[in-house]
Length: 517
Length: 95
Image 1 (cartoon, each protein chain N blue to C red):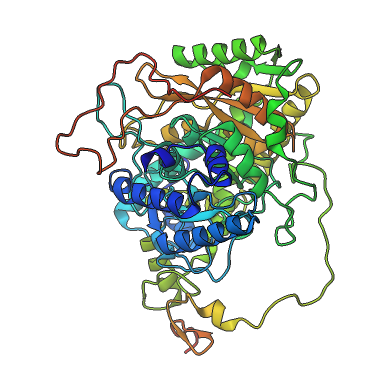
Image 2 (cartoon, each protein chain N blue to C red):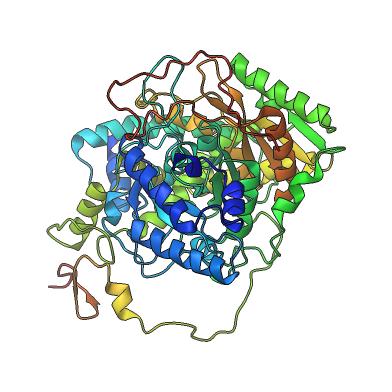
């Protein structure tokens, strides 16, 4: 049944409606693929076959009655940051231990109400803090992509690395993810998948484990722009349980896809042309400009002068808010406890044992910048810089409709290759973090392959709540670039595991035969 | 070096995270590195700039001041590492 798992979400939706296969057959195909492939990839930290088959049976009953809901029978993976009722939720941190929520996050509830099927919980960096999915307490996730002629294990990006790996490896039709500084777009870019971080407030944050509350947003990672548009429509909502969720109707993003980009004004910010930018990233960017221009868009040079300050400001705001959010993990109400000689000692021992090194580092930085006498110098200063970053975009959006940039400064790196200096890892988010700081929507769409044969993405940034235009422009890039899929399913234990053949495909365009829409 | 070992110990105490001597020395370097790097924000003139508080202007929604849920003590203690009845159990705080 490997044919079924290779379908896009839109194709699977059509197949179910045409009754070419049942929701149960579809769910089983994915459960088998997870069984056969997850050992090598570590994308899922928990598979939920009973739930998947129960929901699939319900879907089949609804199809039989002629009452399918919009996502009826479509199997998805859920990032382990989303609370799922009765299903272990850990944020991939030891401190949450076997925490089993007694409630469901709003976003996942929306998906189940629309008929989607849950395959399991996906790996991520601990508390979503990381850019490579190497900080998870369940160990690193491996990307299905490999460099040409090499079988070195590559990272799938982070923090939503389980989501990007599972989507790229056909272990789900699509996945939920979250993005605080680039955690949807960066993993999507380096795995050849599509990821959108909507405007702050578009999706409810209720029931999603909090990292930095003024930056966190939910969004999908999917195989195509259309699939991402379908998923976001059913994730987004106005939620009385999240006072920052916006009170505005959710548009039908899929309907916007066909509109094309004729006359669309695309801004190209000079500040993103950073020192030492690899040639292939510049070329990819230029390629994207050419594609949009030939599809009828007009290209405009713009300036976003405070770009370079976004990342350092982020590394004040995000740790400050994380130190506050993570204060709740005290070994009393949920999760693990490491007994100490008194209550304070119990707190200190529990948090030392339960948090990984990167989380401890960020909690400490956050505690420092918020400590007495430093608030104005750090947090307040950073929030003022955010105003300036936002103002840059406001001015740019007077002249253009979307902004086009690369998503990442380079392709996927090997597991363990970027260690030591934490700042080096932080630099992965240099092009994505501005979007979170300004609260804007941003989408990453696959655009080409690096000289190493691994995917690269382009990012489109839009006006607040103008996701529809982003999907429209992203569709134009996808039409021109095609889809990028892994040629050899090396991780699938069902496929001749006898000889460990390294991926050795000639570098020339292993562009999938996937049809262009 | 902005952060010395004593400062690391002070903030680790505030954050309620136990650190070993070896960890404290490593953190001294890592935290100083990060704080040195974020210092580049000093170049930005923010004199007359308001701090950002929200992405789009919106007024916080209000709702009627009434109880909308509750009576779920069993659910609240369900994941506690130690509990008795509907109480959390912690080490003795008052002698």
